Image 1 (cartoon, rainbow, N blue to C red):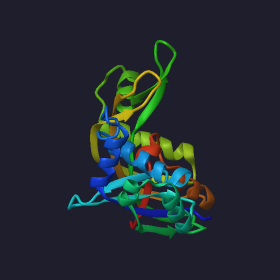
Image 2: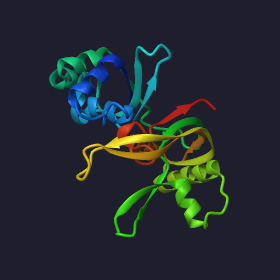
Image 3: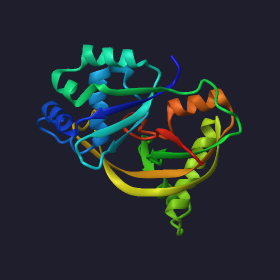
Image 4: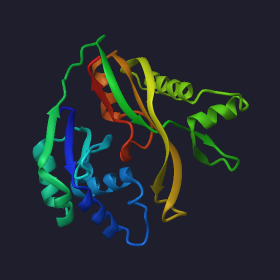
Length: 240
């Protein structure tokens, strides 16, 4: 199956009701929409759940729009929803409001597209106990340059250029930060039932040029940065 973009509509009321039923003693899901959506999609679609994806709340608050990437057909997604989803999740994700767009098998090399991507710009490093930890890319840069005054947006844009250079398939022509905030991420771990982590959420916009068609498809399929299973990293193309 070719790479596809999938559009899934969700009803927030039932999504949060399901989250409360799954985590009656903690707020691990209810405080992190990306984690909650990830968990509900996996429970409803199994390994066919889209990744990466992003959740877009709608203006009236009555629906959520989920856009992501998958290699599954509409029929396979609807079948898994019918086979796997419990009744409350069938009300959350409505099969008739699930749409698929097959993406081109060949991307025009050299063509420039506009883009939008929501990222979690972090770097991984080892702490004093030699454990791998995640750190905000801006804070890591401040430490590296001995706390000299740095521009947060410049650091994040540099991080994004490095991601594209490492992944291949496309050249990042230009990028700018359209939105930034620190958010809570809720995670399970071996040591904590409800571990709280604070991470940067950055929305980038800019221009990207296709370098190699097959590798560009792989880039869309993979996504940018970390936490791609939880609503980060989905690259969406726009007109220039």
